[in-house]
Length: 249
Image (cartoon, rainbow, N blue to C red; front, side):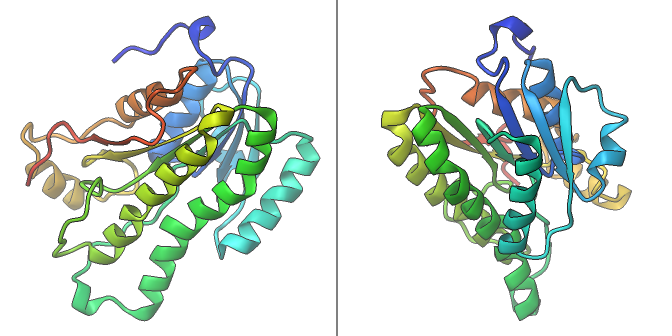
């Protein structure tokens, strides 16, 4: 899937926040947004260091480890005050993965997965939605987990998938509230994807579950996901889209 020409993108000159934008799919999102002409605030635990190796245009970085949604938003607000801008586009590509049977998940793991994968995206929406409505423009892009586009049973990822499935409610709620104001939200659910966060054994195992025997490339997920919100009007708003190539293990 080819990217649109830079001058054809509706993101030209827009300010985008990419949470988790210095690694994995988020890194590919940052590169593609820059290529489409957006100004960036790239978040990551070591975003300043990692952004140096990325092909980006004008951009800012936000180095922060995640402890809680509240502390994250407060630190982010300070960084935005320094920049003197509010984002037109918010991408949340951050969300730790846990592959573990339900009966062995601890209270702490449930809490962590819910805070990172659901409460943080929700807090970002509550923080930035009012400003977007006031400015009559806004785009949110969230990332679910593989096959979390609907309610299913999971034998090895129930805690993680439970939090990711909740993003569908968030996405559709933003879409409904934002529709009169050109504010849109889309949730994409990638299939098994090759990132630096997977060890070689996990990559081989996940690839073996796909029909092609291979993992998706982050840049392909980035282009397809951004393509859904890079439109005005955004007819895909409220959509929950599987980008898994028909993955059916």
